[in-house]
Image (cartoon, rainbow, N blue to C red; front, side, top):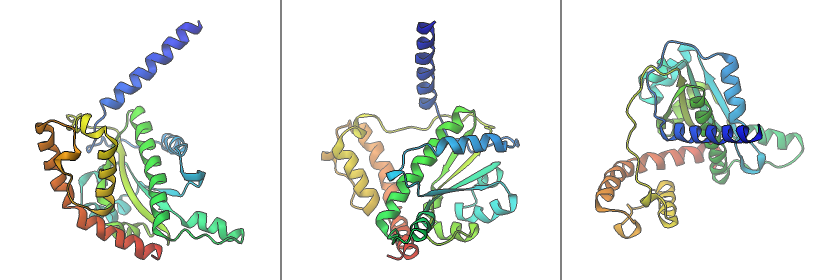
Length: 253
């Protein structure tokens, strides 16, 4: 009996790994609601994600109302899934709650700075990704909206977010009405070296110069793909710098 149970666990884990490899972004949804019980269960599961010091400096704004979705749509370049998805989740860095907790205990918070903005981003994105994995396991489709970092101020105003609460990513959720082809991903080799990963982080955070060939261990064909995608991403450096300036204004630094 125990051997059968162990075999079942191994099979279930292999099946889960395969489902992760086969995942795809869903942008078209059935006109079918997500029950409150299911959504709450998924959120509760996602809140078990790792956080920095267990401070849990994040909040999730659940939007179901069509009118509120319409207010959010312009911030996301009016992409149709914002209006058509049954649920839109805005994952926010929330340093306000922890700061209030400190003040109630006569302690100086000290979290209104860019260092803690990055800490909050780590917590929030871990929760967001955990939610997405759990939702897809239940048969739901999700779509990350990168536009959140392009127009954070518009989202702050649309959702009436208080001070020290900042949107970092948005996810649309619903029952899939399509089965699109998987998009290409970079091959394993150029993503596997520590030097490469470190340069990605530096380029993302500072908008530095493109990576040179000497930093990559990959074929020429793979390099062409990488270079093409990075040219596009470098165009977003100006937007990233603008977002950083907005963060510093909101967080007082």
